[in-house]
Length: 301
Image 1 (cartoon, helix red, strand yellow):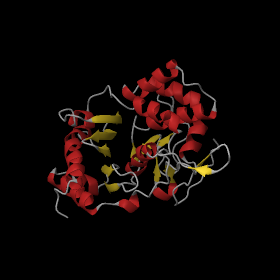
Image 2 (cartoon, rainbow, N blue to C red; image 1 turned 60 degrees about the vertical axis):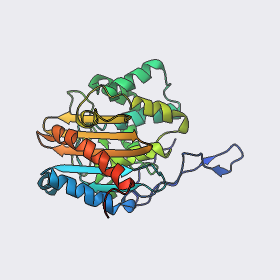
Image 3 (cartoon, rainbow, N blue to C red; image 1 turned 120 degrees about the vertical axis):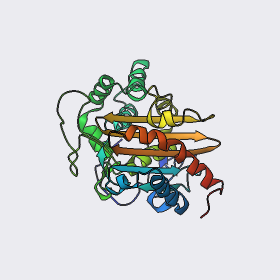
Image 4 (spheres, helix red, strand yellow; image 1 turned 30 degrees about the vertical axis):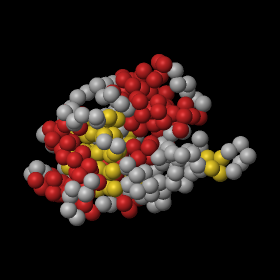
């Protein structure tokens, strides 16, 4: 796979080709709509009201809190809402999902083999947030390779047109940053919007090749750290969750793809506050209910 760094305002248009050379699309691989162009007024109003009811609106106003949800049950017609979606913040271990992406692209390129040992290392990096595993995998992927992949035309998970996005410019070790992001000088950063896009692109077949979709998603399942969104949804029956969190000092981040009652949604929160972890835990169930109720017409427009 060629990687061409470029920032563009349009979504990537990629098609697969058959052996005869005719362009074709698999069932999952499709041209993605702009999430920003699919803002749902009911969800947006509900999200704003939720933060006001919880006394968190002032933190959103000061950009210490960024939050977003997207209902992707209908992949061609997502329903999106967010507060401070393009405000890039330090996200601790959440950007380890970018390293995971880099590993699968190296596998697609033929540079790595998906061995049980490699899969175990990826699983420990995601589920238990192992810094050792993350650093070892980053070394396998290559630092510049990963940066180029995040900025590539195909993915644009870091895009200056949208104030940045996912960034890994430091190993998860004591050594200093090797390349901070050019817009905000962050070593491990994320925006709500690009984190939502990461999981959305996974679901529509644009993140990794279809043959690695199930493997990557399985790696993101069964979180071993039970806090934030995981703790907040612990009491809900029938919930499947694919998740990665991050915590460092007063920075708290979490993303979860949630499947329940025949619906799929993605929720993302990034906070700079000592109470941020508790806020995300307390917001998880209301965010889920907001999506479910608005889909069922239980919320007035």
